[in-house]
Image (cartoon, rainbow, N blue to C red; front, side):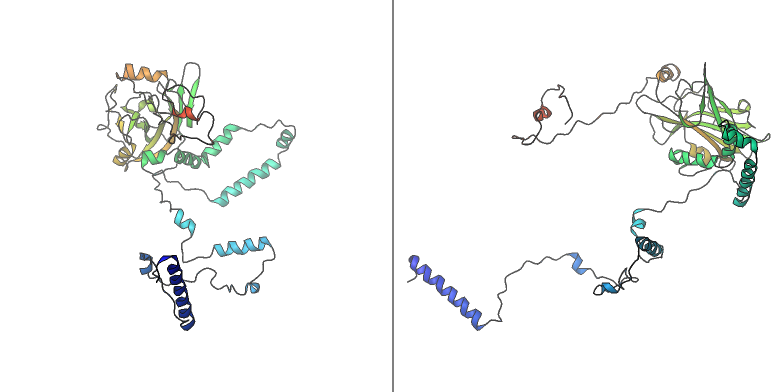
Length: 396
């Protein structure tokens, strides 16, 4: 009889005795329980042999005392630097993360730089002459020595100036937006200056010039041979109102004899910059091209005055691609300009259109779902979830 509580106790005792006998008579038997197995594609992956020796595979980890000891940390850095320069068959982390930069195409004027040995020889000669000059030594000692900045600037323009200007142009994205990444070294120094009523505003390489100051035609000068021909372009790659990849041409003069801008062909007459309100600073760029021969600009000519933004839509890359056989970029200067009151006058009176105003719509502040019992929250926690638009005296 196994019924009732006593019967249940006898049954449990019999089960324990049976298990004990099984373990005593058959100790080699094991109870196998069902186990859930997980399979994936990694099981089917067949690992191939490495293409070469793995790093540190020749080190015996069981006998680390036999390894070479470094006497100092400097010795360790020296050996590590030597090992890092050895070629390896695997790709390093730097090779995975840093993509190789594509080779840039130089579309500028050819230049044959003098030998480095000759430059150093001239510098040593100048240093020797300065050291033997007693007047310079006396002026330096009495702190009355004056450095001729005009001579320093002229020397900089002949030596490192063009390379520095190319770096500035790359920083501001001029080559990327105008020539699709192709670069050139501005060998010809382009000097642009706006004449205002009481002062003059020069254009360097990234300085700020207001639209009011740039309202009239600037004075442009550069060094050129007598029988040479040039083309001057003034464009804005940031101001187009409809197409992001297009520009507005503000001034285009072709077939300039020497450096006489007034004697050139006015392909597109001057128009002042008009950066729209709310669009920030615009890059207004002057590009000087050297011509190999006279060019017929009849297809690119605009009427005078040209007050249509559609007709002033322009792409420097397409213009250069069209005349690339006879045009070579040689000089560059640019300034930055943002909205002022004269832009409103330009839109209303010159372009005869409503002035576009751009505003940035900030997204609403995000608040997590409200908690019924906000433990550990600030005292004004409930102000985040007000139904009214009253100020909440702070940002949460």
